[in-house]
Length: 119
Picture 1 (cartoon, one colour):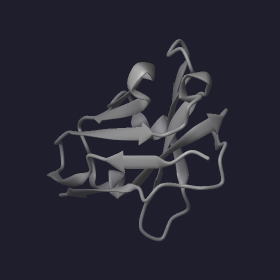
Picture 2 (cartoon, helix red, strand yellow; picture 1 turned 180 degrees about the vertical axis):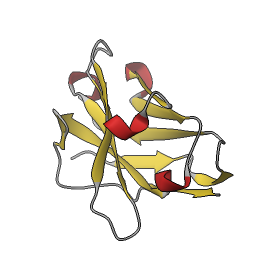
Picture 3 (cartoon, one colour; picture 1 turned 90 degrees about the horizontal axis):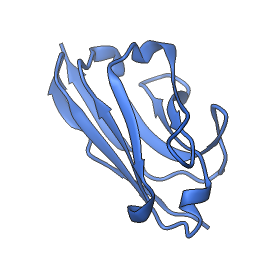
């Protein structure tokens, strides 16, 4: 069973940047498409971005609007999310998971990393 550990969140002002990291223990990490999700206060968890196993296919939610960049390093079993031009609406706990399309593949989640954007 995979363990997912997210990090890199924090408190930033609007317009600022953060780089999130997701490290896994899954031995087959390089075989799976991976994705980022987020859950804002009082909201349901939503899809943010995904990247195929070989990084050839990348997908973003409409609200990203070119501000985020997803990447992965299969040798390190890690995935990243570079977030620029952050907005207060980006405030949420961010999670990673393997994905099937825009849906999480695994039922278990890591603890997430809190991103707070002040106006």
